[in-house]
Length: 70
Image (cartoon, rainbow, N blue to C red; front, side, top):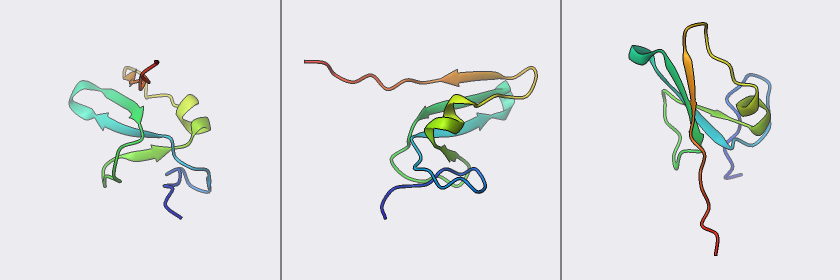
């Protein structure tokens, strides 16, 4: 199985995005699934990506991958 799974405990769904934290800026950054698994990042499935929230006072920055339309 080449697909990476969601990092949330007991979730077996395929990951579609990667979450990282920028502690100095109180920011959670959610973007497209990274090309490789990183030790300080969290891979999330669609459901957990959509339900993501951050602690009070933090920002959530969501990067959206744009596809080329021909």
